[in-house]
Length: 249
Image (cartoon, rainbow, N blue to C red; front, side):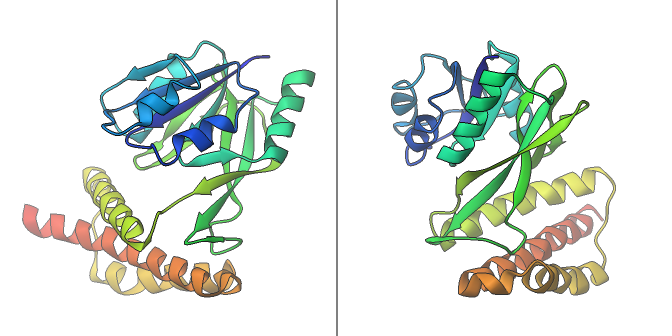
């Protein structure tokens, strides 16, 4: 069994070295860049010659393109701001050595937020398929919330995939603004509409769910910020959808 590690990038000089250094077990590394103007490409080429440019098509299509041009059927798909922890790397190496029992494997993604590893708040365990046989699985979902869809068997790996998320609060808010615009467009295209009730009830429900039921309160002040901004995300998403409805009418 051989593994191709795929990563999509744009201006990821702060992250790409850490990401690629964490996969010494890779038989191939594929980096698909959508137009970096920093040192991302220079740094990536220290680890692989398979660095290509591909015009941005959205999260799902961009990641699937990287999978399609890889050499090997087994894929470990990473974001540039992620790192394979040593325990997770050992589990993947064991699968390579003993051959896989499943067609895909989930990992637990743990996020570092403003200097603290978040243990709850709906952020952990953020279980996702990342290691998979591309003959039985592919990238799906919808932008910006992509996911690997597998039509075969799925196992679980206990190791953590470390996620180095937002540089600071400004970066987080900028991402919320970007993602909620994409989501509002997606909802509108699918015929979904926002009501006043959505604006009133959905944000506080999101906060209560994450802070109390998903135990964000145990993450301290960081958890409070995460859960409040999650509620803000929901509000922005439906407010932008409501705005699109008004503009269209």
